[in-house]
Length: 513
Image (tube, rainbow, N blue to C red; front, side, top):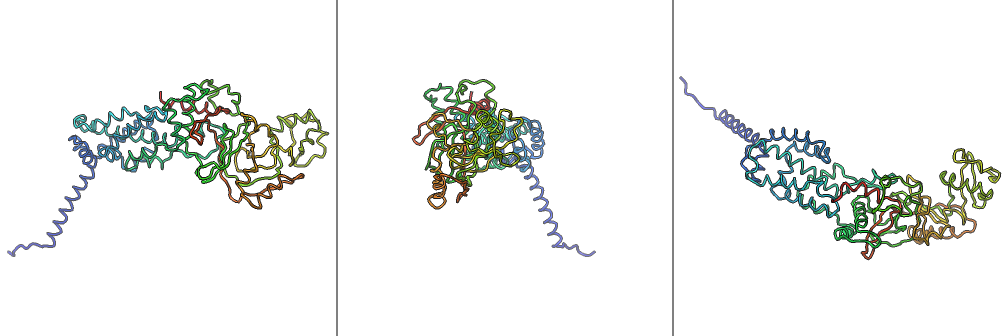
């Protein structure tokens, strides 16, 4: 019988295959025990040694399905877990380093922003975290799976809710105001993913606390319980709360230079590199609360719904692109029906005295005095009206143009008397300028264009002229009723449009009790 020989090559293959199989088995075992390895190390609770990833995932998916309707930002939460294979990645990443313990402490301080801490369940979250620090509080794997799933969902849901509130505010202005056209950033999947993916959650939560000096000034007054002259403590607190919320909205100018109009302050500023380099009085559109009958201290339910007066100036942002010097005023139909035809019915020479031309089907009417204006109403009005350039033109000598949905602009006015009044909500919606030539000089600078503007504004028989700005300038028309002035003193203004009341009523359910 021939001797048996060992094929070294075959033996090597067998050994390699054997060790590869062992490594595969070990790898699969480790793959299905990520949770056990991580959480036993973090908690030293022996129960966690026996956890199986697949068994946990089954429990978590059921918990996620049961809690969907209760979760804040559920689509973002589900996308986060789907991307991480439904593992408890947040707890695994943040339990051992103390981040998880710090989160409820941030929630508990939400009242420093006027926001109710209970919106984020700090007590419940802290109690759940404590179970994972106690080696004996979780006694079996079934309990461990369920407690871990609940902790994951409560943490990520409340964390995104808190981060959204601090960074973006709790009320969406576009949902409560019908004339709000300011570009405003809202929470989205990208911002919420950044919250959940932050490597150091405590540092992240520190970083998103509002640091704007205006916000800090109002917050300090709120926490100190300050009272403004002429207001009760309660009304003062409400002023501070609604304007802190406005400051949380992501709608602030970011450009180095911009024009800024604050409606309740009846003021325009040109800001450059954070400082006002020009300011002037303005007149804005007439509002629903000009007599101050309603206030944050006292209002009825009807005031809580945004029903703007037709002449209120809208909130918006845009770019000033050009000026019309000695402009023609295309009179809006709303003004024509409420004012022009009524005055023409009283005085047949009213139109000629005001340099107003009348058109029908696009053709100029030679003798508008022959029309029986007493028989013309808003229902049968088929005329258009244009006011020629001149001293009486309602737009004055110059208007500043920017795209917007409300057909408003900044303009000069022959009616200078209103600038001597404290309450200057007197226009039809556009913004009248106290010193339009100063604004033109600021935007155009010294040079040929500005010289043309000055000369044309002074002309006795002016013709309309359009001049484009050398560089488009951002404009923000906003509504702020409380702020810190240049000296740090808090100012407040009457809520002439009742917009504070609308905001406060929507804000109430989020406020500290």
